[in-house]
Image 1 (cartoon, rainbow, N blue to C red):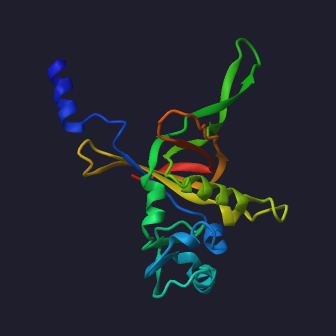
Image 2 (cartoon, rainbow, N blue to C red; image 1 turned 30 degrees about the vertical axis):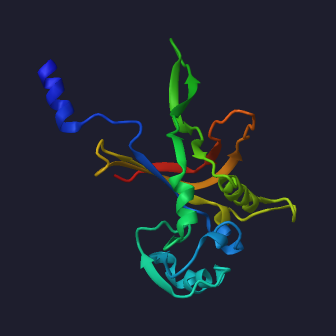
Length: 228
């Protein structure tokens, strides 16, 4: 039994909690506003459009970029969900938002139930999934750039200045959590959270200690799926 267990571990490996990466894709509302994302882009870049929305969105996508970026290439990508478009060629500031990820908690999922009883003992009948928020923590840089980024995202959901609620398609996006093997050379699991948006920016406590500040962010989402 022990030898079989060792052989199976050698073949399949054991998952490490520290071998993962997170990719948070900004919503198109941030791109259009020129606020958080507009100040983080630079140089020549590509716009990858969902292939089914390419005809309708190609012109609009170029007009939504509220910044002079120079060369722009438009590509049609069937692998991008129709909820928006992705950008490549971001400068270092945008990459740091994802690079500064400290912790991520894959949400639990439960099955809701209704109680049925006709004769005899009652039965619990499952009928839908109940899922918690996606929780991500970030290391904070000196300017608290991460806090501003996600508060700008919240402002797309609800504008305090205009006292108005934003369009759903403008503030939803997708988040990817990718699990890697022990040597970080191979992707072993890939989860995609669809129609996600920033719902809570946690408090930050300041004190006279020298601890590194962390910022907790909660994301609501419609569903998640395992890609690989």
